Image 1 (cartoon, rainbow, N blue to C red):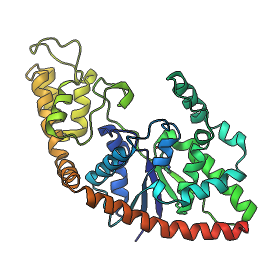
Image 2: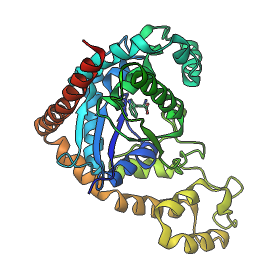
Image 3: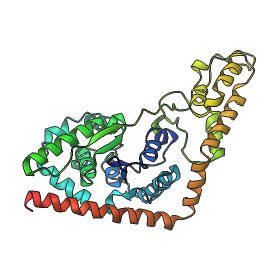
Image 4: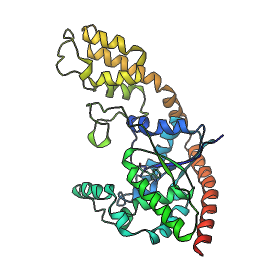
Amino acid sequence: MTKGRIFSGMQPSGRFHLGNYMGALENWVRLQHDHECFFSIVDLHALTSAYENTSQLPENIHNMALDWLAAGLDPDKNTIFVQSHVKEHAELHLLLSMITPLSWLERVPTYKDKLQQLGTQGKDINTYGFLGYPELMTADIILYKADIIPVGEDQIPHLELCREIVRRFNNLYGPVFPEPQAKLSKAALLPGIDGRKMSKSYGNAIPYAAGPEELKKRVRMIVTDPQRIKKTDAGNPEVCTAFKFHKIFNTENVAEIEGACRGACIGCVECKNRLADRMNESLADIYARREYFASKPSMVREILEAGAQKARVVAEATMADVKAAMHL
Ligand code: TRP
């Protein structure tokens, strides 16, 4: 029945956007049907860079849980939990840190990039914890002896390092861990409202489950063909970001929209209103589920607690294997 064990995680670092959903979460929802899945809200990872002010963390974790449940991740099918609720993540991270050469961590490309990027924003992440980011990720994955890891392309170097650490552990202490495989989620094809890659830091994101009105407002801001000033000008859909959205959300009507734009039969405002309506239709179930779970905060807490309990059973068994192998 199951095609393998999956682990993946996301940092609870503020509001989720539609690009995150289409790039990752939608994938997870598909995978849950024929895999045994562990999905973790990785709050310890959030601490590796945002350690100074942690007051938003509880709210961010709750919102992330709502976003996941809204997407249709089924808590009965999957193990959905908060990383810090399962202390074995920290314990295994410590043991792995003993056998990981410093140079392996220092050469991870994301390490140097982030260090520079955040350094220029005045954030000091010259810390032990930040260097250990991929070490903690390794602990997350192998604690559940997961074999398939759905991630975006940016995480590939971390997965490579994870496999190296696994090989080293198995060589030193015996074959405890399988080598996990990355499963690349197809790159998010959804652009931001300005046509660049959708990103929180560009300010071009469309929020994920904010509801029909908010979505409509953002869709109205999508950039269109800059050459098309008046409705009577013929438009060029090829350079129009709204048209890219139609191709994703309004597949049945793209041909008609394209013709109407080129023939100057439909104005940009109407075109975007139709797009927003179609998007709202396809997101309707997500809105409904988010509202449902948002009205039941104690139920969400129970889901996460039950998930942590399920995760702990597996994590404890792995730690018993690890300690036996290491003679601890
Ligand atoms: N680093 C991942 C990201 O930012 C999140 C993450 C933490 C993760 N632990 C993981 C992903 C384990 C996959 C497996 O996207």
